[in-house]
Image 1 (cartoon, helix red, strand yellow):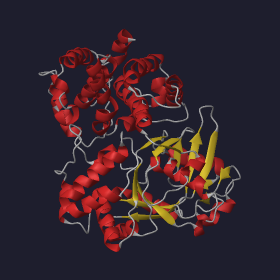
Image 2: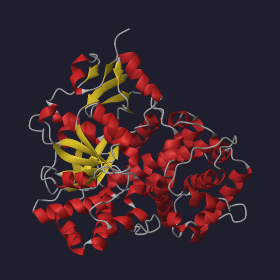
Image 3: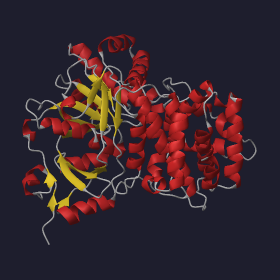
Image 4: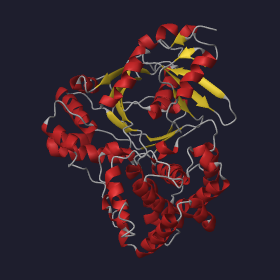
Length: 494
């Protein structure tokens, strides 16, 4: 048996010839990007585009310094440091082909809970041109009901009172921008890479709201000088499994304690609005456009909403992964009906995209048998996702007289999911949501008040006031609570 090789810079030359490795001089790379939230998606997306770019001449100023804002980021911080910030990307194709490459674009990592000032100083350094974010939908701290900044958040209250030792992303961004402003250094661009429509605009709105409360003069500076390009990001990236780690060791003799696995498809559409320079990501597959809105709306209303449709209905049915769910003809048909009859009619024209081809590709991607994307991951933090992914489509269709039945069944299933916490076989569901308790409290009153779940106005806003929706929803609730085998109802609808 061959000796297993630990992943680090010194061992790169010893790795299997079947593994692609960085061929640029990593010692010459310096950080031009600080990225907050170094999870699986960042490591399968922005870091990969940047790694590819670093192989080109004159790109060495665009390395990435990762930042973790939570104690929970300590594990990834420790592993990346141990591996000289290298990690493996396992790209799994639908036909069974597997490509493995080592990514070298991350060159440092700072854990804020150990040294808040080090994070502020790094972001304030003149070499840093971009601060990018993958902090999940919930990290933007907006109220789902009205999209306004939530000043009731305990960490936000702390940051407002303690600007030199912040806890939230907003506290760090304002502290670093204040330091750059006071030093006369051009500000960095703030680049959101999260699945939020108008993610740059949302980042700007939330940060400026926070800064206005803490330092009105700085808020005016941010509004005038800092750029927040909107972007659409896409690459299915499931949670790394023990099997992924084992695959590298047994098949390639490589020991990587936290690789990333993903599909081959990747997309990044960005508005070309940067205040302090940017990498030439267009040379490695990114697309720069004047207006990203139609692209992000297409992706959020079809891919992300499609994931939630499969995730919630599949969870109640007792299924476990996206590929196993969409491989069921009934679920695939239901999903396509939702896409065609409810999501597509409310989309804008997307230049250069054939929507039929795009929807076909989504079904194919969801069905990739080598990407075992767990439904529990898809459903986590649904309270932050569904207002933008699915409920917005319901509102649009109510306004224009369109169909709402497919999306409404998903909302009713979400109520049952939040109330009972089990699937149709009475097996417990792994529910992870910042609003889990509130969701359960509202849903648990459904037996005495069919609309109780909808009274959670921080999620649903005024949806309860629409009679067309509430009549449809009440019927769906009756059906699911009488028989949680959702496939029976789905058959009647398709």
